[in-house]
Length: 424
Image (cartoon, rainbow, N blue to C red; front, side, top):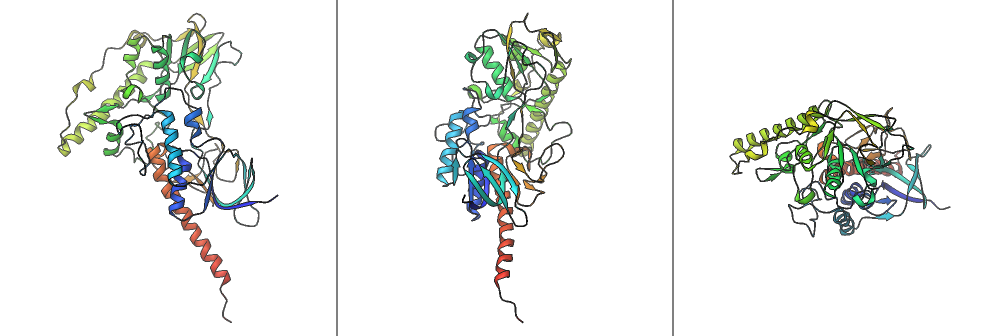
């Protein structure tokens, strides 16, 4: 069987893989991108029907192309985002091979590079870039048994309200996905319970500027490490219906019932932590802190941006917060389905190299692995807070491509030096 050879192999043809291809091409690095599905497949097949991007089109894009159908302040649909990456890959002539799954990567013994087993044969590469991103394995906590007689799906499998059986729904997780799904279900006439954990709650916009702009000018996108205890805190923000600030009290006023963090399940009864009021207060504090910083920035720079006192208005706590539900009999409440908006885990089982810590997390600095020749792209906090966003992964790819290019120059010198005759 013939073995295909390539300098750098990029695994994953989503936003990270497309960005990586662009910068490798600019550095003159021969490469191939393998994608097991279609370009940006997860945007098409692992998102709900009504999803739009959480960042405005002027912000969440690559520098080399604008969204063709959505204006700069709009929020493109998931299909438009996927189409964007297909068009971008075509624009840069990215060598992406779709429908090919990488099954195993191992370091060659006694010689440079790696042996890559794929669904389409064997490839040898000098460098490997794992650009599969952070959303690989949906995580459903082992709380409710699979035989409990209730439908359980992860948010990545949710599509629309008609997909769920008739009855009430419990949504677990109050980040962007959980809040938007719960809101959609409630607007569709469902009785909805939303389990709320610790979260940040930035304004969608303030004083005429989107929160993405505020986080930029305040330097928060460029934070290099998360604050203590904040690495896994979710962000409650939405681009739905043109973009709006998430307000849990407003959701309760619409008829949605808030509960604390989901704890245990026994004999048909779900129990919740007594932390609902604390979690909502924490989100309020995060909101007010950002507004304070924004006001200080406006004053310091003399910007002509209109004041917005209504953004600081906090409505009274609803009954479900004052007297929170601690236990819920799912059958009595008529709950027929649970949607787990509880995040993802990574899966690098195909990458058999010494590049991971004892918890299976990549050991790296800005995407450059401790294992020579292995690189990562698309990780949360890879170099900064914005790394896992569309624009952030583009900048991280530039750094990784530069490091790959530098290594190639050293190897090229070594090869040339071996060919030069040595004077006697």
